[in-house]
Length: 284
Image (cartoon, rainbow, N blue to C red; front, side, top):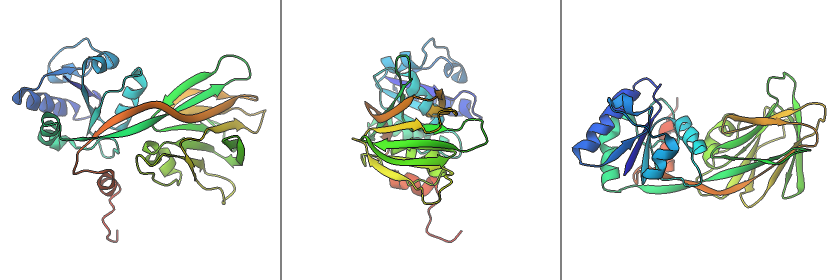
């Protein structure tokens, strides 16, 4: 069974959903729709994202990278394969555009796609008092200054060994999938999927020699505020997780969960990079 889920508020979403349902119907492929997606095709459904995922072998997600991220955060332990259709201008998790619906359906019908396993990180926020809070993210965990205008001091240890004390706007700890998101805009490197690494990237560091560090994903990265009087703030995949105060600590490691991301055989991650970042080899 194929599950269909779209970012219903995106311009053009209804056209893409109708094209997808029409093409699936033409090929006799069974499908179910998520509750907010069904009206775009003139249909009804009572299935939310988790209920849809529980009943389907493959989810076709129509939107952008954010649509996939929000879906992952809503799902329990089981993550079915996700096939992304991009509705927008940029997306590293979506392998096809809205004008390529026939190719998408052909790929699904013939199961002519490969699964790129994208590991999730686990961020364990331990307060000085109280139970630890655990968050899972596909892209990154970000510790930042929040709405304050001044820089913050963030202390980092890798495997229990001190790495640095950053004086910066914040810090991004990203998976390979997240290396093309906030970490990239902060000057970090692009990691290839499956490289088995984290990247630790300071945001606008005051010390110019502070640079991104690539760390084995078998390591645990410990983060804490070096200024007891000033809290810092944790977000995971752009969703606010909470404040970190004096005595609090954050431990980041790879989770046991992974997202199976469906990719076309002819559209590798290298090809996606060339398309999305316009790496043509010519002078621009």
